[in-house]
Amino acid sequence: MIPIGALIGIGLACGLIIYFVYIKVPQKVKGLEKTEEINAILPGMNCGACGRPGCFAFAQALTADPDLITKTPCTTVLQDPEKLEQLEKALGITLDASAMLKKALVHCNGNSEIICDYSGVDTCKAAAQLLSGYKKCPYACLGLNDCVEICPENAISIDPEKNVAMVDTEKCTGCGLCVTECPQNLIELVPAGTKIAFLCNYKQLRNVPGREKCDFGCIHCRKCFKACEDEAIEWNKETALPEFNQEKCTLCLKCIEACEPNTLADFTKAKKEAEVVTA
Amino acid sequence: MTELIAIFISMALINNFILVRFLGLCPFFGVSKQLGSAVSMGVAVTFVMSIASLATWLIYNYILIPFDLKYMYIVIFILVIATLVQIIELFIKKTNAALYFAFGIYLPLITTNCAVLGITLIVNTVEVYSLWQSVVAALGAGLGFTLVLAMMSGIREKLELANAPKAMKGLPIAFIIATLLGLAFSGFGGMI
Image 1: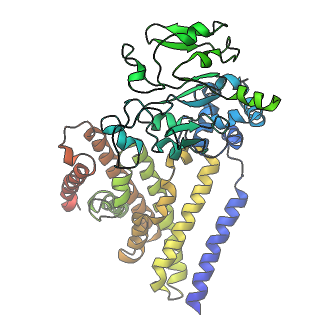
Image 2: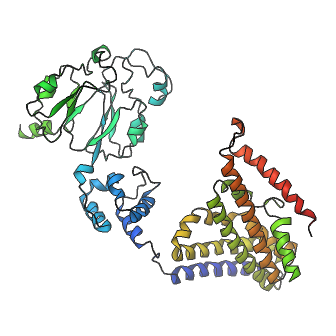
Image 3: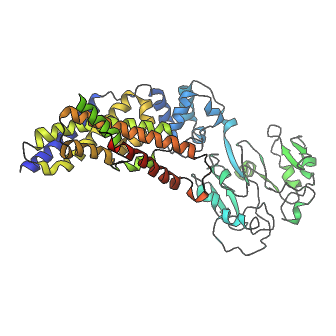
């Protein structure tokens, strides 16, 4: 009996000591109040998009330097106006959420011809190492789900017909994980207010028309530039590609109509939805 | 006094925990990549060792021996060490947050560190020290542990830049360095 009693007694004593220490020691951690306040506002999903090892580490960094929120913003907080207001209050700064909010844009429409039957390891990274993939265009989306798997919001899906990654702009938080994951460097973070999407990555060789590689690639014909009535498109002579001025663009979609290879698309599909509602 | 100094030096150098007794080898390789974290790990282990040897000496001599429960010492010691680490963690977290985050995961890991259990067993059952001798022995053992960890991490920081063969880079070359350090420490063998 004595051994059992002694073991239980000592165990109980140890447990009680921990309990009393836990109660007696003040709960608030000195010097960390602000960090914990910020940490409570942050989403707590530890996605790592801000470049810190977790939400608490980001809260610590923000305590030291509130300006960090503009340099490496927490994309999830930017989606939520209520949380954003709390964070602004906690940090004592004002933020322009719409300017900072970004969305992923896949610069490919996936129409490049498949030139060989790829049956290797089922990831884009593996396929991209073999002669830049199995499609005719070496810059094309391979559609083997690398970005789909990395996306924490399930915002990316592969279009089964075109075999190209599609981003659901509603779900996308602009964390940028897919940007680093894509071996073809197709995905770019663009401001959420972007209106016209340029769906081609084929810009390296301007003297070779995109059409040789893909029916839907940019052929550098300048028709979009000429069609635009708002002077929202500028022609970049270096890259031979159009550049879109988001402020001037009125979303008339004339450039999309003018584009013969259909390289351009309505990014947010806002116009189309508006038409559906009125009709 | 001379005896206490002899015990201190014996624990720190001659019977060094890592290189002579081969205790606490996992932090020796796991936490010895950077000097800063190695030293904080060493300080944490020294602290826990001193308090653990004090607490276990009291329990061993005032509870286990009178009630003839000596055979339960390992279970009881583990229990005491785990409790101490928990309490220390609570205290550090609430008094010095910077130190708490510097320790990070290493503080809870000390619970299962064999060096801490080793010192409590040595002072109570192997050497049978008095209370003061136990605390001094634990302090010496902890400082010896810290010294070796700091030496190893300093060497490994330089080793990153050394032109080692590709197959030997990282852990393999660290093992070789550990043997050389052990060889050097065996030179303390005849001191006392």
